[in-house]
Each structure stands twice: as C-alpha cells, then as structure tokens.
Amino acid sequence: MTSRDTLLSLDPGPEDALYRIQRSENNVKRAIYVHVTDITILPEESRTAEYELIRDLGKLKGWGDDNWTTLTLYKTINDDRHGDAQIHCLWDNFKAHALSQEHILESYPLFNIFDLRVIKRKNDAVQYVHNGSSFCYLKIARFGFELRYIKTELSVYHDLARLESKLGPQLLGYVFEGAERRIVGFLLEEVSGRPPALGDLEECKAALRELHGLGIIHGDPNKYNIIITKLGVRLIDFENACKAPVDNGGSKRWDAMKEEDMRKLELGLVNTSSNGQSWDDPD
Image (cartoon, rainbow, N blue to C red):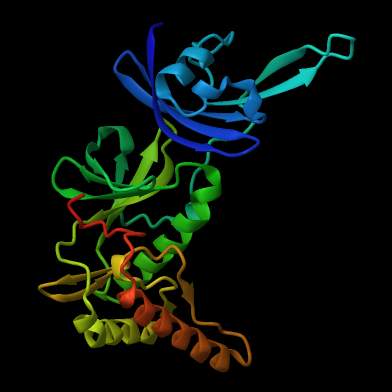
C-alpha cells in the first residue's frame, strides 16, 4: 500500500523530540505520532526539516505499515569494545492523545480535522480554517502534554455558553483525528476587530470585571488576547484561566487574583512587543 507522509507538528527538545505526521493512504488521512527518546538518533539536518525527517524515518523497518499509530524510537549501546548503537522501534507503545469524555458536551458537533481547509496558520496551535460552511479558528493540542491547556480553555467556553455570555467567541464544535474520533481540539467562530489601544483601557477593564463576575480569571489579558469589535470587547485565549475558589477563606485569595488579572491587563495594553500576536491580525 502506498502512502504519503507530511510533517504537521514538531516539538524538538535538547534530549528528545515529538513529531505529528499526516499519513495519506488511498485518499484516507490520519495522524501518526513519533517520540524520538534520544535526539541523537536522528541526523542533525533531519530533526526539523520535513523532507529529511520523512526520508530518514522511512528507512525504518515497518514504517510503511498501516497498522500502527504511535512509534517510540530509542537506542542502546552494545556492550563491547566498539560500543555501537542499535536503534529500536516500539510500535503503539503509547496511546495517541485525546480529550476524555468528561470534557466533551454532546450538544456540540464533531469535525474531522483533515476535512478542514487551512487558510492560514496563526501559530503552532491555532489555524484559520474553513469548516465547509464558515471561516473559523481551529485550536488543537498537537501533543499529549498540551491537552491541559485545551481542557482549561474548553471549560471556559462551556461556561460562557451556559451563562449566555458574549465575552468570548462562540464554540462551534470539537475536532477529531482518526477513525476512532479522538478529540484533540475545537473550533471557534471568527471574531473580527482590532487589538485594543491604551484608549480602550476602561472598556477592557469593564469586560474583565464582567468576566470576574462570572467566576472566571482570564490569566493572560494582554492586548493580543483582546479584540475590540463593533459589539464590544471579546476575550480569547483562556489557556491560563482559572475558576473562583470554593474553599474556606477563598474570598481574599479570589480578590487578589482579580486584582492581579486587572494589573496584567493594564501592563498588557502598554506593552508594544509583538509577542502573542492577535488571531485577527492579517499576518
């Protein structure tokens, strides 16, 4: 069976590396994952370059088989005077990541990630896409360690929808990979507007106070996580959000958290760096 592999995401570290790869077989697309436990297994030029990476992985026995989803690569050193290294493959030694059912509401539709048409990649985890009926934003956990951010953000969007709040974009549905429908992300409505200027500070403060009134701390209210629309302020990127504490003595802690959130907002509007560029920016 012929297949075509395309590098989708990578997370190289000083010691190991993670890769997310799209495999196309007979017009069917799915994701496969590779964990290289020792970065020296790969030649230096193959660690971040798609062509070289796919070329070298393709040399592994069993790489082209269609019966696996995850691969762990590790090496051992022969206990002899030559000390030669041996490369080993563990197929499906770890499970491909997915959001657990407790974080999913049945009222939202599911979208196959490989049916989405990518218009623009905003950053590693956010893409501007078309879902077949509208333009929207896709946000995913590329790898398992990013699931915690998705869980936090989804929880906020669920709460905003339940409370009928317009402070954030509308959640359109969940995104899945593979025949087993592993949910790895979600779609948000497109929100048009501009980043706030210093003159919008009071309006932004009012929106943040409203969010706090719903029992939610944003956590990172910089100007690139705020969109000034014709209908008012919209907040995005709730990865660092948290909910109001329910333990005894939580009131003082909650007040301190709200004050810190407001302080971050004020500092964020003064910041002139391009770090955290807004989703709505054209570039």
